[in-house]
Length: 170
Length: 189
Image 1 (tube, rainbow over the protein chains, first blue to last red):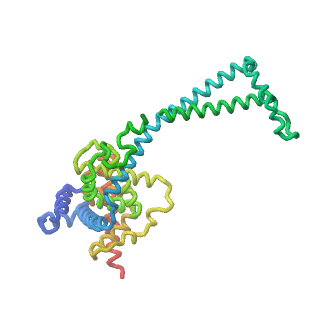
Image 2 (tube, helix red, strand yellow):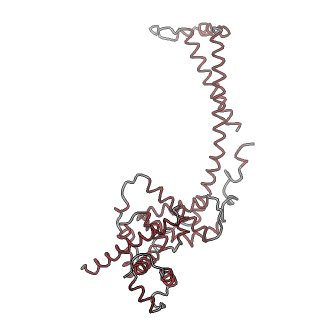
Image 3 (tube, one colour):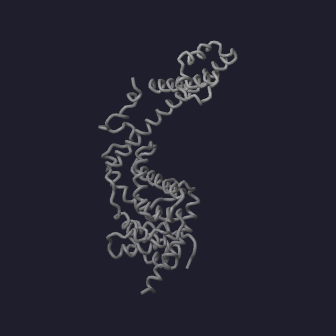
């Protein structure tokens, strides 16, 4: 018996594919196959796999083609929306970054000038007499801290509005 | 003008298919009818899991429809479909598994069949379970689907020269396993 790949495998495979093995095969090829390990393996494996393919292919209960068609369309649509959403997200991030930079620049300038242009804000809460609403035990906030908190809140509000308006325009 | 209006059919009711889909619904239905059973058999046999085969087959067709097809013709489309399924199988194996595919019993494949078919099924299942997934893929593509080495290289992403050697070894191994299986069945009760 010979071992290793055989040059007659193609011939044997062709016969098997056409369904001519073993009836329509020459006696010479028959005797070759008997002695050739490679061709014997090929016949055994190919016949087993072909039979298994026929049987396995009969098993599934297939999803209707229309359902898959519809799902593919839905996925394409979602992909298109996501593709368009990318630049929008970029614009939002850009708008937020610009707002933060401008606000920080302005705050820095104001801090150097000692918040003089915002001096009226210091008196504003006192003019409203909001301290009467606070419990007497609560320590009083420093006016500068209060001012900073107010500015940061304004900054957050303005940034949110800018981002919202950008997304709406897009 | 709102941005949705710039994409035709994107948010509208899908009364008509998107223009860029590779085939119309009737063409797809015919192609699906011709190819789905062999694709399911491939995935089920290679993975050893019919439920997974259901999922991966559907996903393969959806990706197939969503992709742009550089090649044309039934054979090329079919090959492309098998390539998608092969990649999905590979992705599945790379993910952490809750259980091994070898643990899935062969009874999952039990379907109404005649005696001869049952014989081939009972012999091939355990032998396949002893092979590596890549060997199972190559064997199925070569001997069940009849793909050439070049086509298998396209489907699996392996080099054509490697396929020749890998397939020879895999065939040798499964032939030995099938013979052992046959012998044990004959000597059994």
